[in-house]
Amino acid sequence: MRTRLRRALKSLRTAIDQGKTDEARSVLNGTVSLIDKMSAKGIIHDNTAARYKSRLAKRLAGAAG
Image (cartoon, rainbow, N blue to C red; front, side, top):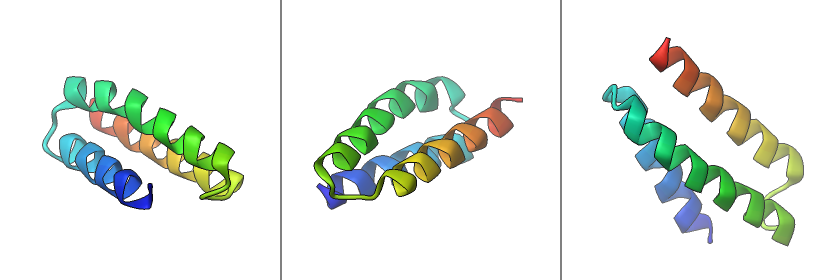
């Protein structure tokens, strides 16, 4: 599960850095879902999940704006 999370985060960050905001928005939904599932199962802490989601959304908003 942690590997899936790392891969999802990496693909999302890569899409944002390359300026593919449309692709990044679609990947963001799946990544947030994965983060929530891992948090619910106790694999990552709730605050860690919130921090990941916040930083990703902020990064995407900065790239889009």
